[in-house]
Length: 327
Image (cartoon, rainbow, N blue to C red; front, side):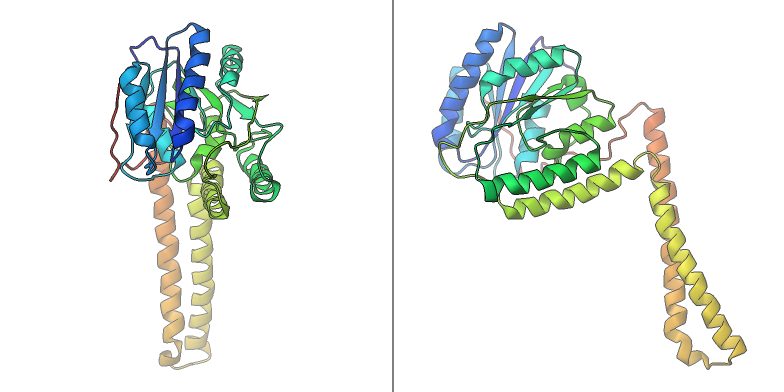
């Protein structure tokens, strides 16, 4: 993507039903970015708000050339909103944050300073988190330990949305599902240098949290997929070959048993129909997995020779989404 603009930093914030917060968020972010004295832009992504947030965003964007607004026709989730904001951004450094005023824009300069020290990704750590213990803190701590163990990225707080990225890193990451929580892990695949700083965290002032236990389940499902990708990304034949080998082995063992019963014990063939069918199913499945492994290996090697990213993650599906830029 051609990034001819000289914009230094882009701030991306997904927003959904934050009517009371959005104007305060805009003012706080703008005030901080003005002190940096470098070219900047703000990108607010409305993720299908129904409370009047969209109208406020349109008005703000019409008054400030530094603000761009992306409007989704309906709710697509935080990962989709971030992905859209990242694609629209032009800054050399991209900062992501929540739109509910719990992240403090005053931490943005500290994130930028840490990036300038030579890191590619700087993640916020809500050291003194202002959330409910049972509903938010405990599930988050459990998820954090699981994510760190799978991605091998040692962070205190993988769920903090306040993060800063270099342009070359964020351009190579594709988000779907709940993968915005795993961006440091995805960046590690690309060889990114990752750091963490403690940031301010405020209690929610307006509205209700969009997080619940159902979302935790979705995070665990995406984490399972991520674990699979991280283990077998470089050599997918290791995964498909193992599964295919087990299928072929089971089919062969059952085949030997069928032959023994038919030829040695003279069991009538009609009594062995189910076993014979099962043997062929195991063999066919094993061969298919082997072929899948070969195809996946060819795809990875082709991508490597062409210098492309090895990240297998899907791009944001825009079907039904409507992006509208204001300002």
